[in-house]
Length: 467
Image (cartoon, rainbow, N blue to C red; front, top):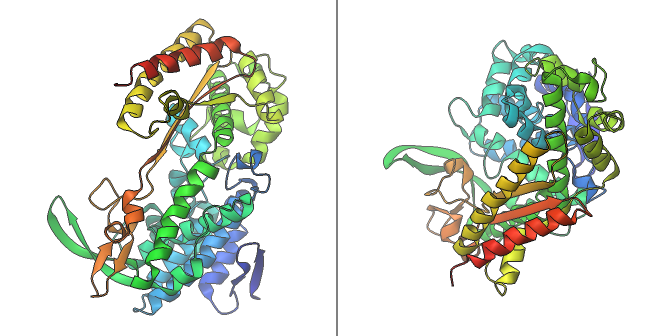
């Protein structure tokens, strides 16, 4: 088999050395499978192209970029010893880590949580696809247990090794690709990182590990040399900036909310035997999934294009809820947004919108808004919601002493004396970062009654701010 090449806007040429490497020949075959080709039809950033028109890149391209980045990380590991089998598993896991994502990715998972659909979670779908079916058949050429070992590495199961860090850590191949790729495709000038300098200063080290005060064996993971402390700061800030500017953008989140409510309504009607009110035929992939959410074939039949194609059908639905929200999503006629935290800070003379006092005011406002949403839903169950609530948060960096996932999720810097210390102890910038929170309320343009109600609730919450 000849070597294969894919042109990538981020990495230029990504090569699969199929003529010299059995693994890369197998992984090239994995690319041709139906489950992996499906990723071409799932966008990496969901609805972000409604804000950034260039952000239409797919999970397919991202996965190839993660594979390419994983090879570079493996070269770092090779300087400190070599475990061929684990390296091969890590490379396959890097390529397949996102194979289970559903239409519009994380927004689809919210729907799964609402209905308790296991196969709406990409981790569970990825695990199934790697262990069973077409992908597993291809991986079996690497040995009978290879597919299971790859699935374990993707899920984080089994013993933690430096190769686990390639798949899931602060400097994993996934993050090192999507940070740069999402910024590039969105056209954002925020969040730039000094990737090559980070790679040049990346080392392998043994980091101390303990649970509830009990000292455990050290964990081998990626660490940074002392010359990279400023690049590490920029890395943390770069990731942090992507959330308010891209991932948590108000318009993107508004579209996700409409999408979640729309699909939830469709699933409700299908499960209640009212398929005819959805506007969809009985054999539509979304109807089939609603009836059989744990069937892997029904899962594989869903992608972004299926949902976009269904919108015009659902726009003709007899159900006001489905018809209205389908048209809104299709035509980008989204709800208007009120930034509750920003409004509170303004009304309190530009007070800190992330302060405990603001948190308390938000808690009161959230409860009042939820009551309004519930009351409207009970009084008009077949009408689209008048108010949509979005409440998200993101920590820029979690210290090991906090609720973190352990040493693999810390950035450790090697000091002049050769010790490994957490970045937050050496960087005043990182140590000073606070958790980002966004609390927004959405209403339909022209719905003055809902707008007035929202403003009244916010004003009432502001009045309860301690003086």
